[in-house]
Amino acid sequence: MLQYKRIIEKYIDVYLGFYYVSEITVMNIIDFIDKIDKGISNKTLQDILVVLKSILYYGNIIGYRCIPLKAIPSVKVLKHKVITIEEKELYCLENYIIQHLNYRNIGIMICLYTGLRLGEICALQWTDIDLIEQRILINKSIQRISENGKSYTEIGIPKTQNSIREIPINNVLYHILKSVRNPKGYVITGTEHYLDPRTYQYYFKKILHEIKIKDYHFHVLRHTFATRCVQSNVDIKSLSEILGHSSVNTTLNIYVHSSFYIKKTQLNKLKSPQI
Image 1 (cartoon, one colour):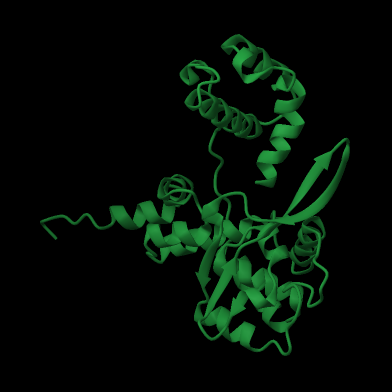
Image 2: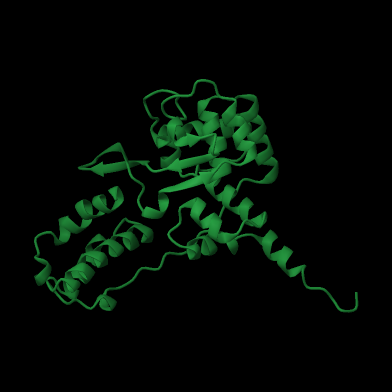
């Protein structure tokens, strides 16, 4: 919701806010796209158009205007190769965390075994973790908001309803979480004050440098978790819900076709009748 609010305030209100919905034409929208399509990524432009089309769709339903949504250009976002932590590096990282257990390192381990996003782990509190039922409740996220050339962090609900979810705690993670004494406040600080996502990202990179492995982005923890689940034959529906994806297709498009190992395993199922 915070992301949609930012899009409306930063783009739609600025360029289209002086129109009544009943006055907007397809040409107005094309001009709008031309004006904002400078210096922003295709993904951002796609998000803006999704919000705009939702507003216009609602306007069409209640009779303010009948704009042919199919006439509004779409933006195709190229798929990026999914990067994961290599097996040897993963062993080094987990070994380091186990030998240096503290709140911040436990947060990294949680991400490796749940696929939490950066904003979600920074907003996670110990009260969200139920060790009796062995599950973690994800119902908030920290996002960075940019306004008038300045930025600040804000805790709110996740950007989609699917992101509000419960994630089972597997046995590896359970034993680590169980070893923490008198946990309180936010998980990665152990206090009532949360950690800025950018600060946590910097801390993660500092660990990577210390143990001499590649300089990965924090999101690699989520990709690594998801890819390992696919390789372990976790069913895609369950994985999609654990990741908080809006649909199974999102999970399939990102992860199932990304691993050469998986393709090789599947093709090796073909047997010659002569063998």
